[in-house]
Image 1: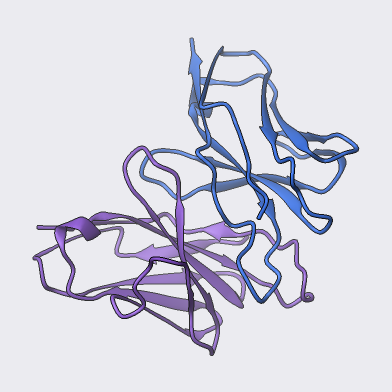
Image 2 (image 1 turned 30 degrees about the horizontal axis):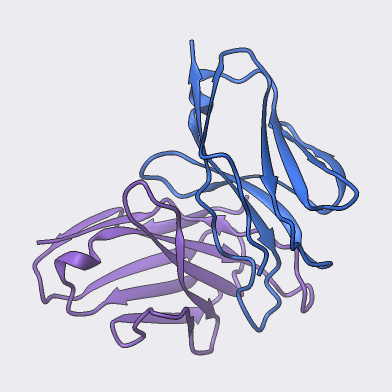
Length: 120
Length: 113
């Protein structure tokens, strides 16, 4: 159980184009999804927290107009990198949790396999 | 925000028991401790989670002392496939914020034959 998928697994695009990454929880309903970015040989960096049906909360330094997040259902969240540039090339990872058990939840994050974005 | 400190790297051999310790001196009362394993170009995989004392599952054990200022992930009889980066994450999502969702640098565990 607790499987999270991401699509695509790898994408190469030209500078200036937009890229959409999908994150799906396959066998559970995710009230909350998280988006991370990871550069080579570095740790994961949280970009934003996405709650179903509401606007995403972005971490400091992350441009919300550049990284558009939509969490329209309990099983799907999307991250759109708008007007991508080479410096946006990275490994993007989503995670999902079901936090409906209460305001303070121990629920674990389950991670997707990641999406490798390369901007030429 | 509970900050974690782990050794940058560790080496061991196949068949050995490996213990990775994480320090989290300012852990909050509601914080849980979760360990993840990550292989290159893959998302992290949940290993184990605990609050206090000892937790054991089919892949690992987690030891947490009474003061909860540290935790130790124990991997019994490691194999080459256990070579990965291991992260400890301390905190809880409180609904209003993402405190505790900051990954530290992790521990790069290298298992040799």
